[in-house]
Structure formats: C-alpha cells, structure tokens
Image (cartoon, rainbow, N blue to C red; front, side, top):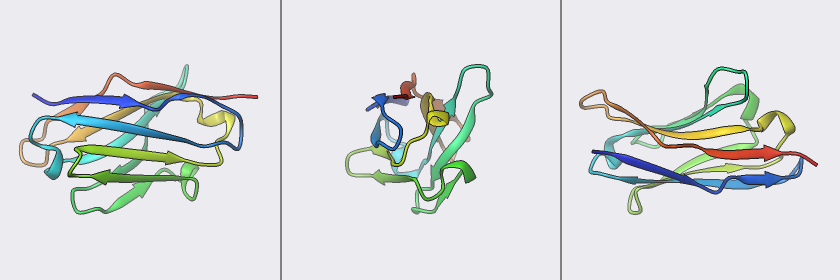
Length: 117
C-alpha cells in the first residue's frame, strides 16, 4: 500500500513562491517515477513536472524556467519549488507515483494553490 500526502499549498501573490512537498509511505518510492499534476476549475488534470528514479526531469511548457521538481529518496519525499507564480497557476496540485515494476499509479489527496492579489 502506498500513501502520498501533499503539503505546502496556500494563497500567494503573483510573482511569489511556494514549495510543495509530497511524503510517501510504502516501499516503492526509490524506484517510482514521481510527478506533480494540477487541475484548475473546469479544466482537465495536467502533468506539471515529473522526475524518474534516476533523476531525469521533464516539465510542462507553461512552467519551464519557473518550477523545479526534486526528490529526496532518504526522506521518501518529492518537492515542487514554484517561483514567479501567475494567476493561471491556480489549481489543486496532486502528487503521483508510478511503480515501474508493477505499473501501479498512486495519487495524493491534493493541495490547493491560489495565486491572487
């Protein structure tokens, strides 16, 4: 059983920064690809950033240069550093883990990020 718990969301002004954290329980973290996704009201969920077990990263075009994903395998935690936030970054952000051995996908409960003045 894998559980993912996000934290770090909140209200921030445009141009501000937030760091999201996702703590994982279970034994798959070190081999899992970890991702951050977001869903804004009325829109489909989209991939924001992803990091493999080997540290390869990819980002949505809309966040490149502003967001950074990282992972700490010793702490079973993945982070999303978000800088230069824009109102269009407002969404619920979800952490996800993909097990490459068995193909399972696991999701956290989400954390709200609101960018507004």
